[in-house]
Length: 601
Image (cartoon, rainbow, N blue to C red; front, side):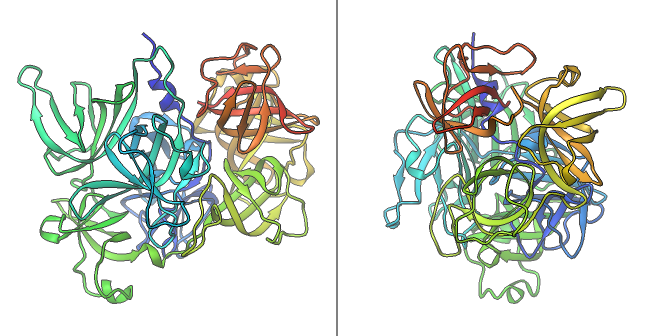
């Protein structure tokens, strides 16, 4: 019996990687960098993970290397996961606005886990609605699995909502399958909600599907144990969650109970309903040692004896100097980042804290350009970038595929106190453009594979036409890391002559150390270009990816899922709105003819 659970969990998410999971750019950001350069930067007040063990929970708001007091962290060896450590994904599977947990040991990250807040269909009742007080019609509310979601375009209140496969709030429609990341909050009536940091359109279930992916975050209510099966169930905002003998409980040392905040992933019937849990994580720091940093919406009156909670975790904010050091007259509800040490009961005793409104508002992107169409449409770490005509650029080199850039900006051009929305970063500054990346920088390059050595874990990347390699070279030597992950095909594809790939890793002295290899349907040529993203506006033979108007033709356009040498010209069932794809298309006049479309799992 067919289902689409695996396809949905494979995702419409971009290989956007070496994330800089800047759990907000706070005072600074603790950089978890690959080979000392490009990385996962987690905003840190107190040097989270600088030694011993540590945990950071927050939002990905930048890609590239960011430091705290000059301290950088090696991130060449960590493994990336989706929900639990049994579901490893590529580093490139991390997206802007993702909710992220980073565990460190001895100053280095050992596990980075992406944890969506919600996956399910946008409910028809209550229907998506603009906030009545917002005259710009950029913010609103909608519901997924019974949980209220609010969007945010005020940089003083938390990370700005970023869209993928959608361009604005009004694109959300009832029945649309979405993945939502965000900050958990509690309203004045004690009800949980999610302040969205990322909203992704996912493919709809196929016509013969009976189940679909389901994920929910919220407050446990009505916990009971079935007398016959011995399994527990409970509700979150009216949605039933059923545990089974195979449910993975991701929080040790804590007994599930009413009023706890939990995150559950699993499957549910098409159209919504009871979620059968595959994983369950209680929002708790019981058993966690070392320095911990948590970003979230501060809730009052919910932290037990402490009086405060952040992300459902009780927080003690009584330490001397916390208020005065941050120019706050009182702790008020809103987005905060708190650093401290948990006690045996899981209470986080804060040693440093800062309100989100005091943080830098801009997003930072550092990496090489791919998918270049124009200055107003190209990718950096898989994030769509628009450089307006009024933004000055370095005189040389010209922006093009393979050029290393450092960019600041905001979704839809949002600035502090301003409004905006979208699926692109509108640049406010381009401080660096270079044909040669700095040593240790995280980079993405397209090309074809040659001289593959499976025993040595090496190959030669041959330059594709239209892509600039450092120092004018037409080849680069590649070494694969021990934790390399392959996307859209197995490692054995490397042995196929001239396999087309996109690689991501770190650059130093003409060498690439690669942690992610994505197999493509074809490599760009002098007469073609490539872009990657979510399919939108699919109607007959027309569709768009990243705003690029495209066409496909049955019998002419080649499709591949594993790109294992068995492409097809028959349109596959996965080619739908919300599918995450890489497209090779012929240059010329729009709409451009797609020659190859490959699914990026």
